[in-house]
Length: 403
Image (tube, rainbow, N blue to C red; front, top):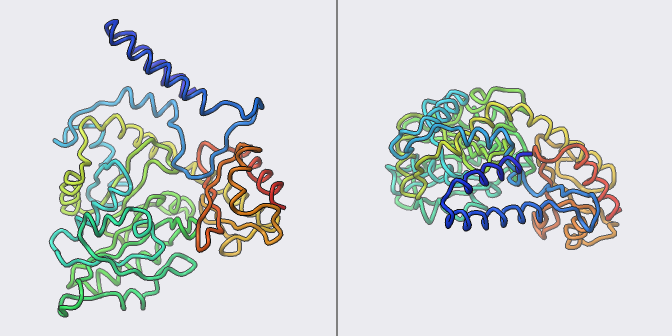
């Protein structure tokens, strides 16, 4: 298994050390081995495994990823000399049809670097973004307290789209001292809080045309928070370069459905990436021998994209079975990608506060709750570490406990 492979590497490295250092490292290895055994032990003496549907960020790196990491050629990435990072950036830029790319530690940093780059020369900048967007809700307000820009929030419809009328109403030039200058429109694809909705290229092109044609003289740009953009591309059977043609920049998370331990890629034009690299440094994201992690990202892009369709099929099975059992799902149960939201039926045997703990205790299934107004919604996210048996266990557990 990949865990045995990891422990073997660590043990070999420890045994090569002098005796004193070896004792210290062997203690660390014993702790690592305990943590691994503890985290995957059977529940209550049974053979049940843990099925973690809280997020697609919980995946473990595969043996092939770990092997790639141990063999990666490295250099100092701050100096631009890590060949593996450079190869990953070049591949991602080409995949998305952009000039350049930048490897960053996290998706939040990728979005923040994009905002700081696009707003670099505008000290009274305002970004337009959705009220339910990840940038607005779950990234610590970095656009305000770190990038120093204000935002104009507009409501997404049930398909995660802005109306062009709302975008026009939110747009301001700098000819009125009362307003900040609109500089950037931020989209999210797929849209997390609205259930993994995949925005189509036609919509992105419409927003891009509004920014680039109608507001060309004002330098308006479009950024996509594409944490799960490859889920959107796979679900619509469209190349990422075509899907994102209407956007100036895209951040792509490698540690969600693609399964890497960390890392995101930011793509855009050459000057945009130059400024984003400067922002990354100011945010503490400059990395040295980052090829160790970039090699896993490259492996994921080469091997884990097409399989995202399996996650989508499993999410759709969850949605169908839960809806048939009387649970409420948004959009009439329609699921585009790998995210499923649901609420308990009115006649549920459990309260919403009780389900997560009992589901884990009795069935070994972890889910996330507390979403939406009043915290009535639960979220399930399928990923490469959950197979068909895991989906069946989740369906059985949720329906048996509630209906």
